[in-house]
Image 1: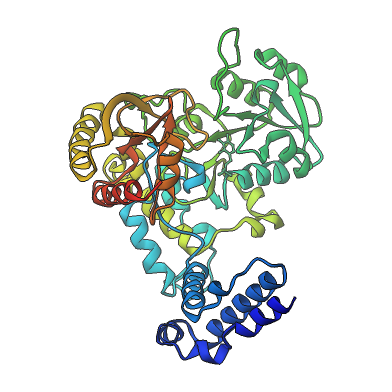
Image 2: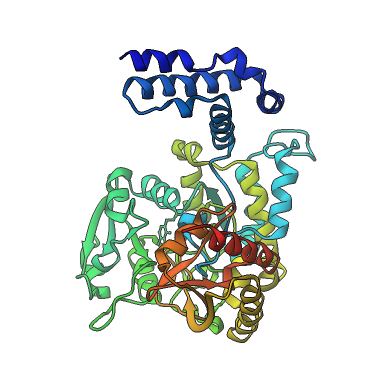
Length: 468
Ligand SMILES: *Cc1c(COP(=O)(O)O)cnc(C)c1O
């Protein structure tokens, strides 16, 4: 106990710490109040540690305390949301923020964030206008639809459609399409919260048009078709084509809604993207309403787009809940810039998501080869850098079966397991996120910009130079 009292008295006073040059310069950068409160917190922690017998006299030197203060301050001031290098090759990685925006979309973000805009103002008349009308003409042009509106994400779009058009009434869905996407978006749950009544038809693997027809009754509000984005069924599988559903919907006078998920606007089949509905094709085939995400294959900002018949979109617009899902000016700006690339047929050059998917196996092989050579010469000889044929995936709950051919760079270090390499790379600044596969640490350059390659090399160099 006497020992503890002695240690407590040895803690340097706050005033004395505040005179130290490194701490003075820290105050210049961050403000006195912040630093004082950090010192007090740190000292309190030391007092508690002394009382529980975890501190020795050596830990109490002003130098040691200064060092841990500067570390704490730096850690606390570090933004929680940070950029990182995605070396996984997963183009739409939901945990890493999904789609990267085009240059034009990025420029619009910076222009609109610091300036007033005509978000709800009609410059011609000087009167009020509505944000929801801003992008409608462009969406009509690109999608070939009568009307369109933008909400916060596709989950909100599905919810608003059901709540606006089917509250208290039945919505017919195939049992094979009652999907869960991303853990919290489940069609049956969204349906019940929206007030619509789920009317399941068919079986998990087989649903026929007759099943839909038999389920139609006086209380039927909608036929809903949901794209099973993140899974595929194989084998004994059957479901009606969109055309068949359109015919039934017209015959019965009941609108057909299609949640297409990803918002693909150009055909990417030549690049291996199969089974993803193209938005314009669903509308042209006769779906009354479609909805999709802005930040999946479309390659824009997080948003949900609802497009189709003017009458139905009008009912959704008048839903008082619309306000709770509205988006801000930055989203309209970025979405407009993204759609503008599609209008001019420049998606493959300008939209990063499309560009990454369209990268050829030959180009990736060449890049990987050159990268591996540079990496090898930057690393000690006990690090093995090798190339392996493999594939990238789209991710983000899109196209689970699509395999885009790529060349991977494998990193192996003597006496260090792949998990240890992965975590060292992840703890760099910026963090480097790699793939762990077949007991190897793999880099896929598909999702790395060429201008990031030097940072990737120096990050790997630093990570592997650290003592194990
Ligand atoms: C991704 C997806 C959603 C959810 O979209 P968010 O934009 O992530 O809210 C809904 N339905 C389908 C079919 C999807 O693929």
